[in-house]
Image (tube, rainbow, N blue to C red; front, top):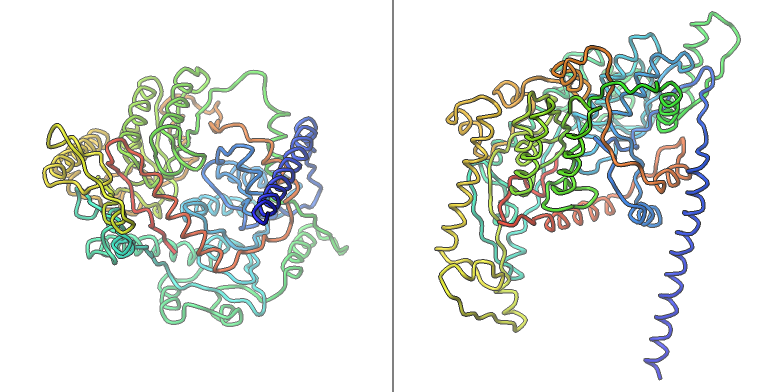
Length: 607
């Protein structure tokens, strides 16, 4: 009887949960239909300030999430407001010309999530704001607390204001890795690896408990290059010497707001309303009017929508030649992949569509990827080669374009990189798990019969034999040599030169251009201009982001969630749990048919 009542309670609970979810889905559908039919117009009033909340994550492209994924994230409180880079840049460019916009107000803290809002992405936004300043319009940054990324972007402002009890963190950069070898050994999970490249460290988290010396060497050089660029850009923004900020960082690292002001790292102490009042004072002085002016606000997301609406109104019936922006963002996996991955089959279909689209005359391949499976990378590159036979392709690197990310890019007509990009990592590894020991611990045993010495190579029940490992290593060597040959062909280098730059070593974008792995420093707009030149388009062309049409769920969620206030920052514990889950989840992306990968470490993270 007791079990009956327990079962009944469980059934009722499940029924209520299902009903609740269906209710939310029904409401979302109704709102979505209404919202899709009559999307509210965004009006920009006179004397308006464009508010850029740094908590809005800036990605290379929109994740192609389905309705269910967006709705679940919203219900669970995990939905992250996002804007993609090109629309942010174009909105800032439009604001510079818009007489209704009198300034830009930066506030909040940059969200740290995977490769989103990385230094190269923030650098492109920063350059757009710098151009905005040249129009004479005011830019103000306000922080309660700020870390390096916040200050990197905020230092472009005419005025940097900090809360009187705030704190500025300029500690520098670090790269922390997570290692699983002891845990695997403890629980009886066997790991065997093959690799080519002295610096190919992606296998180390699975077979070591600390960094190897070659890995420490390459990461130290990488961080030194990135930090040097970050310091230089911040120093120029504040009209200070780079060494001055570097010495302050090494000496103190953390600065109370009052101390930061003494060092001229910020301009003044104040509260948010006082920081915003600077626009009133500036506008009053420009109009030479004693009457106090009030300034309106518009969020970045709303202004982007306004720009989109204006484009539709002014769009000519005659289509201009287009430079398509093709995105490869996320880990490269075989098959369709999820919304946050580069699924080879999905991307190949998109590439084939572009090849047959006569309105698209040239393509920018925007890469933000740590790499992935070698078969997926090769199939994507093959599709790109077929496209390149009809249209020029220029690669543009985002936060990271390494390993498989570099593989798919290396044959492009030109490569643009940001000095703070992470690239290279030209190497290959194989990762093979077995569960023999963990199975023994719970009383499970494996045995087999085979028709030949290699017939059992696909087994997870037993470790690979020496002969099997030799075969897998030979395949790893072959793939590595293929990778080298492709880079040599694309970069027009001798094979020996490529091999000296490869070995799985990661390079900063700064070094990549110096050693010939990239052609130019620049962002996505620079790459688009270059592609247009290669296609002889003159000045009469436009960019076309090749994105999946946004699900109306995104519009609904952002409509209700949009707020002028900075989003709540999750607790340290919550952030760590999400980080840990993300790293473990990454193991599911090892789906290459040959178990061979051209990718960076799964736990790589620059802090």
